[in-house]
Image 1 (cartoon, rainbow, N blue to C red):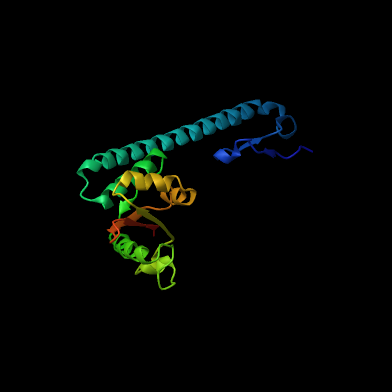
Image 2: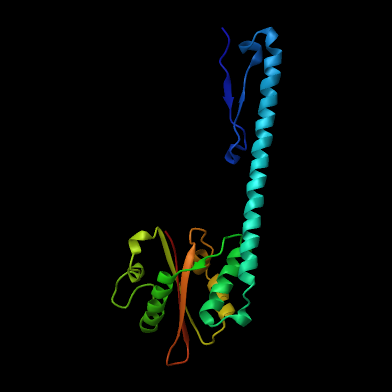
Length: 205
């Protein structure tokens, strides 16, 4: 009795390629050499098409990130209206450099960041002054599947230095480069002591 076809997993199965090897000597008649050749040709074509599809996907991603980069760098820090927009610029610059899509400015998150910047002057922590969790600052918190916050206090209004300090902190860096975040809000408030308090809220639906 002929043995059934045996399934063999490709060592690069993680790339989405799977192949099947058939024992033609036991499963096919002697006249089936042509069928074996057709099957082998089909496997080579399928693997080549899968490889080409992966290359095309990577190429499209590179083009998209390049387009985003051109849009971000079209607005230089020198022309930024205030510290908030400068921080947005540098945040998206480091995301693009890391191969992550930039975030867009969101009105609700911006409003939340204004509140959190003011609250951070009272209590500098990832918790609200009244003890509630940070996410409660959002009016529609349940609509967000991902949410994160970065806080900073600085003696100068140097947006690049603020973002660099975040990048030097593992937890803040993880927030900045989190691919799940698609939009953000940022606000800076100057306290009576002359220091700048910065709140950045990030989320996605």
